[in-house]
Length: 289
Ligand code: GLN
Image (tube, rainbow, N blue to C red; front, side, top):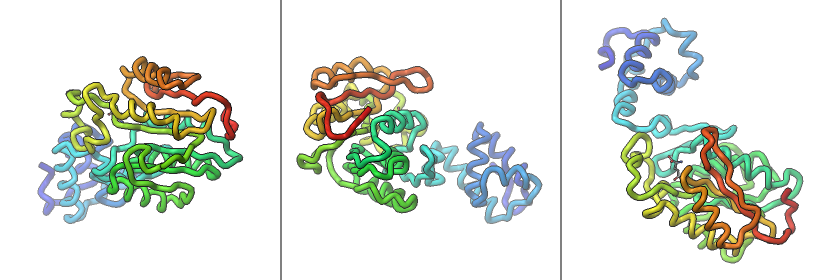
């Protein structure tokens, strides 16, 4: 237990108690910063300040939530992605640093100086769509999600960051898009296997299962996306998506079978297969490099 809030507790002492309980100094600092509405750097300069009883009680509650396994991002309602501070809720997946690789690869295919249509399938908090929209103000982004709760979060994030070039659409993958075609399609779809033991561990236990799991082999949604993407890409357009590190061979085979060309797989910082891509044949209207 943290000390009885009726006793005086310094910032230093509160952090040291919480670090011991959580086994993680950064988590302890992030949560204290959140309880006090101060940046983490403030805590260092104010280590001898005494916490008010209200703050001490609020902090104790946050530590309990974290001890019960709740992800930091859901407790604070925030997660940084790319250059954006995003709101996240349990209706959305928590944006991962490895997904920034998908943004980088997409940006190589979206010109800076001309209008280009980009689709983000399964946008969740809007992380990928909003990062691309921020870097490519001339791009017309469409972001789809099957969860209207997730779309509310994504819309809110777009407004907070004044990103007006993203249009949010509710629906099941390509279903709401008629025969609209895009220059680039990106996605971080669910790709975890149904019986993957990691689902019972860490943050995954708290995240929306529909954003994580995709059938027995984790590939059900990727199969659908690859199958239908050609109907929604201009000639020469690109499809890029994130997948599990053991799925590289399988997803390239799916892309090949669906007639995509120029296939490749990019590695994350741990040198694991993470993002695969392919091009819809014959050059189109958007000069993708
Ligand atoms: N990258 C996540 C994980 O393995 C999964 C996200 C997803 O299914 N798109 O924890």
